[in-house]
Image 1: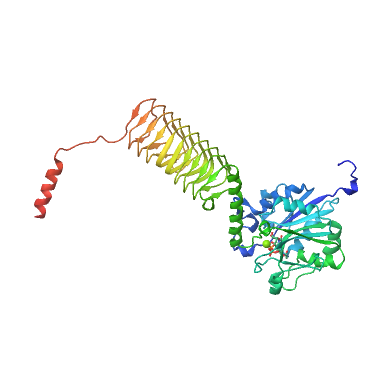
Image 2 (image 1 turned 90 degrees about the vertical axis):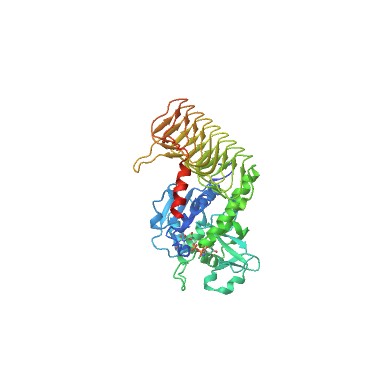
Length: 448
Ligand code: UD1
Ligand code: MG
C-alpha cells in the first residue's frame, strides 16, 4: 500500500473481455477471436494489452466451444451459451466479479491493435462511465456512434446498422469502457432487448447512465488502435497495420528491410541489428535471427535459428527445428527441416536436407537429397566436418558420412562412409569408340 493511502481509496479493478459472438460476418469456421494477426490470435492480443492494468481479475465471456481453450488458462471464464448481445455478455461477466472489485474495464476481443497507453489512460478516468471514442475520418464506417451533449459528455451510443442517419456523427465507439461497479449493478437490470436485432446492447448503458445523472466521460483516441475486426477484409487491414508496426520496430533496432511492405514478420520474431532482409521474405513463428545475417528474397522461414553472418536464400525454405550456424550458407531452392547446418557449411542449390546434421565447413553439392522417411519412420543423416557431397547425391538414412569424406557426384549412399575416404556408388562409365559413326551410317542408309 502506498503511504498515506487508506483501504477505501484503493480501487480494485477487473477486466471483462467479450469474445462469445458468432463472428458470422467472418464467414469462417474458426471462431472469430482465434483468427491471428501477425501470428497471434486476436483474443491473445487483447489479453496481453490489458496486462498493463494489473487487474485483480480478468474475466473472458466466451462461447461454449472456447470454454476449455488453452488461451483462457489464466483467466476466469464465463460461458455465454447463446450470443444475445454485448449487454447480455457483460451481465454474465459481472456475475463473476469478486466482491471487492469496484471498477470494471470492458473490452471486445476483436480489437487486436489496442494501444497499452490508451488502456492505461482509461484507468485515470474519474467518471462513473467512460467510453473511448474515435474521431472518424471516413463516415461510412459501421462503428456505433457516440452522441454527446453540449458540454461534450456522452449521452447515448447508437448503432449505425439500425439507423444510417447516425453515420453523420463523427465520433465512433471503440468498444472499450470503464465502469464503476455500483453504477453497473444499478443499471444492468434496466438494459432492454433491442427490438430490431433481439440482442441486448452494452452501449445502451450510456443512455441509462446519462438519464440517471451518473457522470459520463469521453476519451478520444487514435482510430487505428481500435480497428474492430468483423470481416476478413478488416482482418487483413489489421494485419497490414500490425506488420507496419512490427517492421518499424525492427528497423529502429537496426534491421534493414529493403522493401518492408513486401515481407511478413511474425510477432515473435527476434532479429539482430545489421541483418538485411530483402524483399518478399516470410518470417513465420519462432524465428530467431542473429546479427549481420542476410535473408534473401522469396525465402520462407519458420521455427529456426539463424546465427550471425549466415546467408539464407534466395528461394530457401527453412521449416521446423532448423539451426544455421555462423557464416553458413543456404542457397536457392534448398529446403531444410529438423537439421543443424554447422559453421561455414554450405548447401547452395536445389537440395532437401531433413533430419540431418551437417558438420563445419561441409559442402553439400547441388541436387543432394537426404532420404529420411520410409513411409513409417524418419531416420537421421550425419555429415561430418569438411565433407564434400558431390552433386546429385542421394543419402539414404540412417547413414553417417564421417569427417573429411568425399561422395562422388551422382552416388546413392546407403552405407556409412569412413573418414577421409571417397565413396562412389554408380555404374562404371563405358565408352564405345566410333559407335556414333556406325549408328549414323545405319540410319542414313535406311532413310535414303
Ligand atoms: C460493437 C459495438 C459498436 C462498436 C464496435 C467497436 C455494440 C452493440 N456495438 O459492435 O458500438 O463501435 O463494437 O468495435 O456493442 N460478443 C459477445 N456476445 C454477444 C455478442 C458479441 O461476447 O452476444 C462479443 C464479440 O465476440 C466481440 C464483441 O463482443 O468480441 C463485439 O461484438 P461485435 O458483434 O463484433 O460488435 P460490433 O458489431 O463490432
Ligand atoms: Mg466487432
